[in-house]
Image (tube, rainbow, N blue to C red; front, top):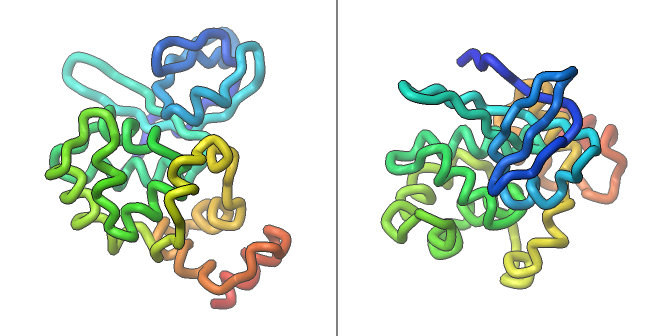
Length: 195
């Protein structure tokens, strides 16, 4: 699939209800973002967002993500019947994308159902359709789900690097299984590639 706009990088000039305006050399792009990315976007500061360009008959919308992993998870979410871009973004607003991915891998439909506009039935469909596509389950406890502000800043750079090399989310997660998280990113990627 070819995307017309793969990412935008520029200055945040405005913050609207659930989107930000990113000025890229004099052109302002309105980008819909999840709650965590919205909170991290500061006015008059530089930002880079990986984007999904959603084209409908009556409108074109950009959905932005601070990490490539979050974008890939969003793309998986919108393949589920009943999940459109707004519902996908609502699910990603629940917590850090890695926690959302872990909830899906762990078949935690109750957590997914907490997203605005996502009911129990659709949440169950998400975990059934995607649990085998998002990679290995994440071991988490309820404190991780409630303390999302701390998790919002978590990014697995090794996971991002593997995905930039062409791995899908599930394969990148599997490749990192058993690789110590306290190693430098380059060493983690090297070990993952050997696996």
